[in-house]
Length: 153
Image (spheres, helix red, strand yellow):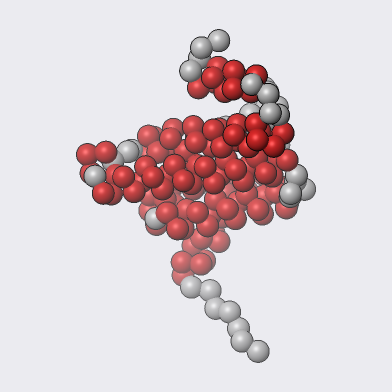
């Protein structure tokens, strides 16, 4: 019977994913002023992994956090899971674009704070898009998004 051996990178990803999952679960226990609004502290781990080890490792950590966190919290395949996954995927795409642009064109390199803001905005946009497409196909959702993004209300 073949055996699987974990590489050093596998162990590193598992450790960071475990840390992100722990923060994610602890964060879910915090009271929230509005339903569904969280600070997203577990995403800091993804950002650290991106800056130190690259996009592939960051994607593993983010996706493991979403899947394992939803399994442990009992939200797997629920609307909460779908919104979390869409936000994580949109955030990863934005991080990949922002990080890749900085590597190709050094003048456009974003700081950790810039990448964090970019990822947070993409995370919210991904969640709003999914909420509109699957759950609430009403134009009022765009007014809510506009009030969050633009402060126009």
